Image (cartoon, rainbow, N blue to C red; front, side):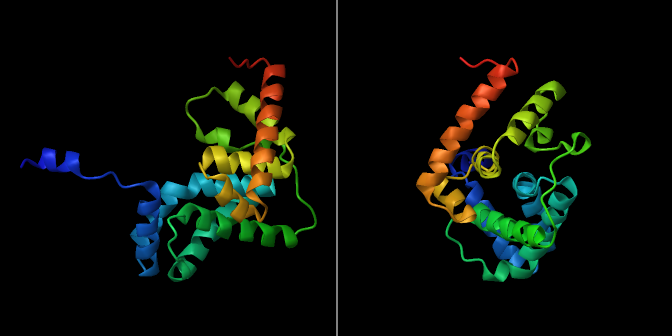
Length: 193
């Protein structure tokens, strides 16, 4: 049997399985696995932190703190085939801690207007501005749910666990947020079919 044929019949490994494997290796002190986990999930972590904190500097701090915390506590991780939900729960807890340690949540300024749109090479800078404006027009919980669903591709149940609300609430808030985004984007000249 050729190597090519052997490769073709092997089952594809899913992202949760890959992340689970990284977390197991991190628990054993493997820094290479931490680096790989960072590459796979840093956009998810940063986007979620920014959606909660609305401050670029704080989101960057939480991004770094999340992976330090993961390194220190990976041995506590119990695989339920939901490693990204666990990672984002760590992120949420660090965000809440950061919020408790400051007087108020700061709005994004024009020069700090970096959200998930900045990670995409597929859209123009004008589109990024419009998307950021529309996302920032949503309520905090709606923006967080959109980021977790669209960027991190999490299920409503996982989002509910992270945000400590019911899955039905997540679904209804997601639906309302999508409708709001469509209206906002249409008002700004982006049309849907």
